[in-house]
Length: 501
Ligand code: ADP
Image 1: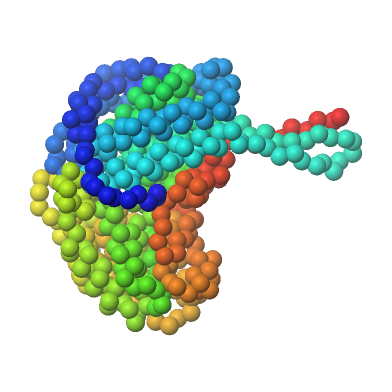
Image 2: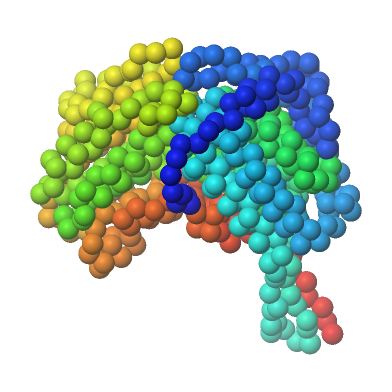
C-alpha cells in the first residue's frame, strides 16, 4: 500500500461519523435511496465495545431483483452506456477527490464498524482507496483493442475491441471494507460496467457513505447500486441472478466455492480473491532486524485479518531463536485496544465468534504439541480482543499450520542448509497460494526462490499492495487478478471484428 509519513495522529471526525451512523439508512438502487421491500433492518456493532453502531436496511431477493433491473437499465441507457471514457475518468477522479476530502470521517466510520486503529484506517486504507480510484480512472481512456493480421484468403481489416462485461455483482468482506469496496468498484466503473455492491453485514458503514459521495459526484442512475444485507440471502441471490453477468468476490474459500456453483447457471464470469496461508521465508543472510519487524507487521497488522497475512514463518536455523524472540517480544509489547485510543497498535478481531475460533486453533495446536512463545489468550474487555500469538514446534498436519485462521497467530518453523528447492516445497505445502515473502540480501537466491514459490504475489524484503500490481491467488486462493492491467481487463469482454475489404 502507499507509504505515508505518519507525522501526527489523525483527529478523528467522530461527531460526523456518529451523525452519519445515526441516519436512517436505505438501499441505493437506480440512483435513488429506497426502503428495503421487506421494511426490515439489522443492527451493526462496534467490535471494540459491543456498542450499537447503526441500523441498516436488509436487502433480500426482491431488492436484488430491483437492483439488477436498475443496473441492466443503466447498461442500456445512453447516459452510462455511451458516456465517453474521459467522462468516466473524470467521475472517478471526482470521487477520489471527495473521498480524500472526507477521509477523516471515513476513517472514523471504519474504526467504529470494523475496529482497526483509526490511524491505520486514515493513513493506510483511505489513501489506498483514493489511489485505487485515481489509478483506475487512468485506465478508462486506455482500454484499446488490437489490430490483427489474418491469414485466410481475401483482404481483411480485423481488430478487437474491449467492451464492458455488463452488470457486475461485487461482494466484499469486513476486514478492509472501504479499500475492498473501492478496489472492486473502481475498475468496474472505469470499464463502463454497472455495479451492484454488497458490503459485509458486519461492516456496511463506509460503503453507505461512499454511495452518498457517488450520488454527489453525479454518476448516472443505475451505474452504481448498493445493497446492504446478509451473505446467505442478498449475497446468494445476487450470485444466482440470471441478470448478473459477472461476480467479483473477496472472502472465504468456502463461500468462494458456493459462488462458483451459484454462478454456473448463466456462466457468469467470476473473479475470486480467497484465503491464504502466506509463507514468510527468512534466509540466513537477511537483515534480521528488518525481517523481524516485517514478519511481525505481516501477521499482526489488522489483527491478522488480512488474506495475505504472513501466518507461516520459515527461518534459517542460525537465526531462528533470534527471530522468534524478536517477533515474540513485538507480540508481547503490542498495545491491544480500542481503535480510537491513541496508543493502540492492534484492534479487536471482528466478533467474539471469531475470537473463539482463533483461540480454538491455538488450543488445538498446543494440545497436539506446539509450544507457545507469545500470546495465546484473549484480552479482557467488552470487545473481542486476542493477544498476538507466536507458536513453534507445530507440524504440517496441525490445523493451526494448515488452515487460514484470519487472526494474529504465527507458526514459526526452522530450516537448515537445504537447497532452495526444499524450502520452496515446504512453503508450497498449502492448499493456498496467495502471497509469499522472502527476506534476503542474496539477489540470486531471491530470484530463484521467487520463481519456485506458488503464489500470486512474491515480495522480497517488504512492500505491500499497490493499485498497479496484480493481486490474486494460485490454487485455492482464487481465480483471476485484481489491480493492474489484469484487474481492469477482467471487467471487459474481447470482441473480434473481421471485415472483408
Ligand atoms: P469471512 O469469512 O471473511 O466473513 P465470508 O466469505 O463469510 O468471509 O463473507 C464475505 C462476504 O461474502 C460478505 O459480504 C458476506 O455477506 C458474503 N457472503 C457470505 N455467504 C455468501 C453466499 N452464500 N453467497 C454470496 N455471498 C456470501
